[in-house]
Image (cartoon, rainbow, N blue to C red; front, side, top):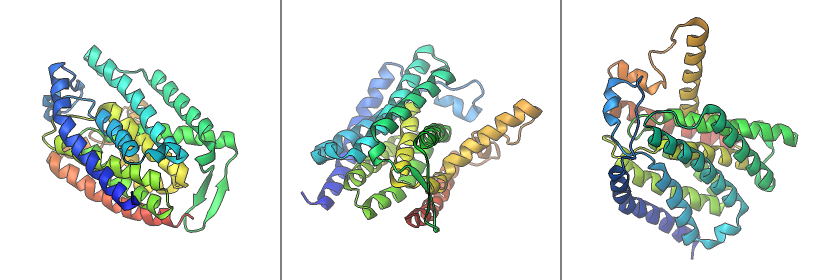
Length: 325
């Protein structure tokens, strides 16, 4: 089968699978009260979302994996594909456990921070040790093409921090209907372009399937959302971006491409430090997308504005990334 036909087929199958499976999945979750649990500190405008089913991320993790393999069984012999796919799947499992604990306790008390960090640390270290042959153990400065080779233990630590930070940054971005999924889909476009340019056909197919699944998911997640991705989806997406960056030597570009995620996490960290150290807030609310609600902007307007910002960052990040080699 021609490569172009596989891409089209993978995308189409992912979209159709999501559109067919999601209504049944939403019904299944609703019948078992597997719903969002809102925080006591949540804005009043968002407390009515407490009965919305959660863990929609499971489908846009599993469906692209299955479709990729069905479309082209040879991807299973591609170690780059296996590295990215396992990163996606392992971090999804962390989020799944967290989501299940939240659902069972009917509170926001899922995995403890320590347990979650230990799991993320362990999974990332295992990924590094298993796939060192497909990981680029250097950080290249864009435009100068100066590669900083890192000793393996230093790079392993860098990779662990990158995975943890990116996963939690994407998690902070998940909070409005269609926000995280839409921003993630746009942020994946530069990496898809890199995969095409560098001839990583297995990765390109996988990303196309993920894009198709995210678009299908947005049909049910855009305002008013009928389902949320939960940590199952947000942590998986964060690990996906990290795996692509370390495999393609695009870690510098990732900070720009993932600028929305970085900004969300930065604001949360600054807010927490300010409150703890000075007992003052820097922002009216964090994650920062909620601050715009307090200022009177509509949720859909905020989400669309974030999409435009992400599109600009993706374009800039692409030119940074393409000048890294």
